[in-house]
Image (tube, rainbow, N blue to C red; front, top):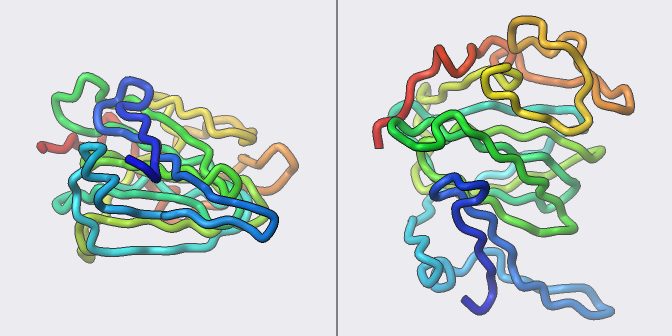
Length: 204
């Protein structure tokens, strides 16, 4: 695995991986391979990616928690500008870590990638002024297949860095701010999701 190092089963969650690429730099800049199928295969990661996505978000934007209901996807996510706190929640039926979450800071500086298997909910919070977020998927987008759950569900207990506020009994962002006073920003849809007790588990 010459160009990547892989931390498998992060935080005891089977299949969840943090991948760190080898970065070759000098006074001119740097070069790295952002994806190498051979290296992934040697690491035991045999998924085939079929779609790349990219988004830009401002500080305080929280996207998630999202999952696909009938066509679950494995995602390989990274940040090319700025920094985010990226979260995966295990929703796999029968998993020993069902409901457990793990968060990872992804940034243009650390260049880490986060491999999130099928059967997880996913979301991220932008920590920098802006962030550009890229991810690969092993299945194409299927309209009307997206589901979600509350980002602030007390049953999950996700600790979002720099977020200050009191749980209002729903996924509403009202009353939440970042530590510097930046309001937390969620889509209307993401403020209506329910908690994990009202979310189905994946049969994989």
